[in-house]
Image (cartoon, rainbow, N blue to C red):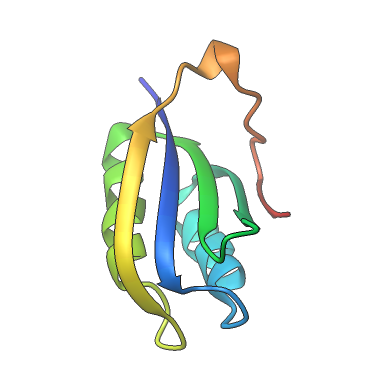
Length: 92
């Protein structure tokens, strides 16, 4: 069984290697998807993996790398048929 989510992370998350550290964590957890900067300064993460590993990634996003300051994390369940999520985690 797998789970797909969109995670939006707010705070000082651009210009601090948040996407790179997210990719590293996702690879460690076996999570597919991508991370990209949004025009408003937030980071969007699409992720697809086992429910357990999605939960681990969401928990990690609340802290993020030491270079970041996470103010808020929100996530939404996705219908995988409605979204194309890469098997390998990418930075966009």
